[in-house]
Image (cartoon, rainbow, N blue to C red; front, side, top):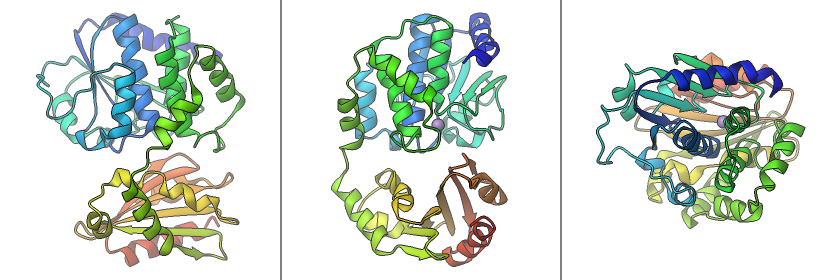
Length: 332
Ligand SMILES: [Mn+2]
């Protein structure tokens, strides 16, 4: 945190000098827990510390049961596409955990493209589309940046705020499993615990809420698993037609890719979402330490973190997989 003081004072000055009235906060499409927790915790800072008229935007399609539970607990009235609000009335867009402009929900992009923007993120490949860009790649989660910023400005960290930050850390460290699980992470968690948060209850709300449909989809994925390159590469495939057959949505497949690395000997895990109608495949990748997935996905215009990244490739599955496999072979 010490070395980030200069960055934090830039955020503070930016917000203090901002004379506009209304702020809208957004994360990225396919919102995850880091994104959710960081936008809601930053909302609290803007509202309570800077006294700004602030709104949080979430796409209706990702605003599922678990997300609603979290926002309810934080007493934050999230707005969506169909909220009764004038979307032309905002003066500033703040994005968190969002590495590029295309990852801002399309609906919101239309309304905010000409607004000043504050970008706070921990993706090293952030394309810096803001007027002020605070990018700290060493942070385990964007929520860690928000937390350290909160301490920097002396924001009164309450239990709700601590819970939101805890959610970001649980999400982006894979529940303390990934290589970004550092001493700083545990130091922060220990501080969060001092506010009285109930770690096991938060875990239950977030991760013991699977739908039966999700298990059906997972069963399909495991049934059709492929082990390649002497068991070092694990491939999961899920055609959109199967997702539709079960009346499910993409959020029902959240976390599937993480099962790949649980297999003995697997160095890279790949989850392929096959969109037959769009003739496109969305790939999510996971890797053990020592492999930088960004080197692989950047060939296809993708991005992410060294151990968790993704990309989209146009074409039928076989053809796209051949291309991706060729790149993966260079590193495994
Ligand atoms: Mn993140």
